Length: 466
Image (cartoon, rainbow, N blue to C red; front, side, top):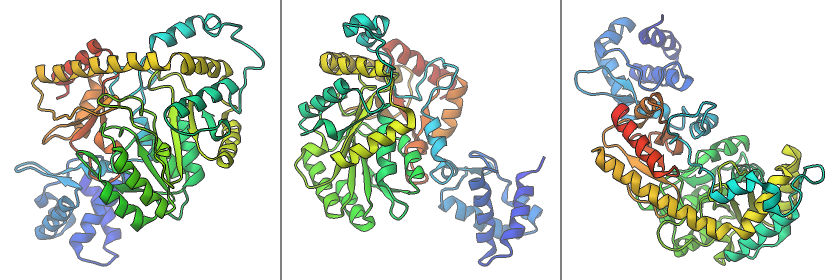
């Protein structure tokens, strides 16, 4: 088996043909192996003395190379132990878009407690509807050929009314029905992003957007965030500097649970209008206000900004109810509607009909039930963390179904590996972060599951992974 030193020796031969100090060439060789996946996050590197002897270099050269890697965030070291590849090796330069997204999915085998996905179990009304769809719909469930490729008319009208109730002056021809909000996001990003400019997005954000950005041939640029949420002043400066075609912003940030005030949202939208940047307002979890009132859609705030609004039913009703939508101008909506139909011929007509009834007749009651359930599970989660004596740092979210947990002095990546082996998978912070090295000591902790499952999950993590 080739050792790390053997690998570095082969790569260093190539780098020696370049220019620059030898310690730069050595550090670049290590980075090239990490980026290619030949060296995994957490891999031990040889000691300075051992590597110097193996590569026939002075120890001062190796010391300088290792220090350069530490300064760049590639190495972690503690006194008396060999250095390891650090958090940057699992940052944005190492995580593919597919790798990020795969982390938030449950595999074919259900774990003991799935804490890597922020999707809810079904609300009671969904179970009732699917147990007896004809009774729920008041008529025959299976009608026609089962297709509604351009969108069921009743569902389109129900979504339109739902948007109007939130303050957005929507028309049916401006609504595109999709197979969940993820597809709506993908359609919007791939239609509007270009390879010539980046997509601006919160520096900590939903991993599902990265695949869409990559598919558009674009790249992400980070809008700065603080512990309190989006840094609006810094974001305005970034928009003016980068002048992106597209900016992606979430109502309640996924995963931090922070939110913009209406006043700050208006400031951000005014800046976007001045740079001709279209804003995607992702309201997928926008109804889940845990503290205070619901946030109004950006498109209802009366600015001159071009806004695409994304939403769906899954976060209130059930993760398996793949009904989403986007709202935009009628011209773009028509294009996206036909593009979506060409992709998958639309969600099953039966589910669209069920979705229409759920949205029109059961939304408010189900939302109230979901919020009460979330608050109970959040309380149980916080109590379980305290009871286990864990030193995790959390700030209760304004909205949304997740905690953004900090583990002081710990590696979230290594914790995630142990958590998966314990049967309670979580997602380390790097999957959500645009900037390499961010989120090294963070992970997302959804609390959608019932209180007893949250307690079991936290206890298992404390006993077997922490």
